[in-house]
Length: 138
Image 1 (spheres, rainbow, N blue to C red):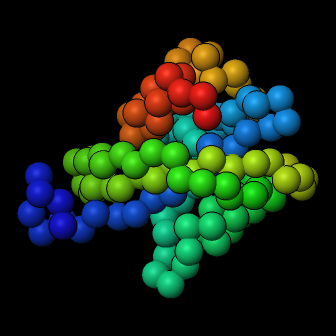
Image 2 (image 1 turned 120 degrees about the vertical axis):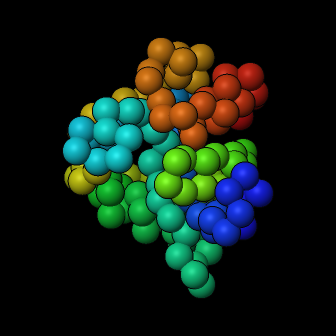
């Protein structure tokens, strides 16, 4: 439960911090009609019961982007409260493993140097991950 809003469950959400061979990070902009529309994010989604984080991220990225990833390791945990819900956002470092791009929830993607991530208007829940990436060797 969320201590700030008792009785509200915390939803586990996973974010893929996908790196390419050059070490750049994938940023994806949400389509305007979706929640957080127009904001950039690290793609991912809700963890389903009985699903491992690796299975969740592989499924979400395949469904939303048409590509394959290799999930490597956890990177950062973020507790974030929206007016209507609270999430535990878990960022995982991933490696791009190929596939044919087919965006369903995003209208733009960019491979970005980690030091340039601050130039993008990321959703508020992703800000702590952006900051940690910019200040780390990951």
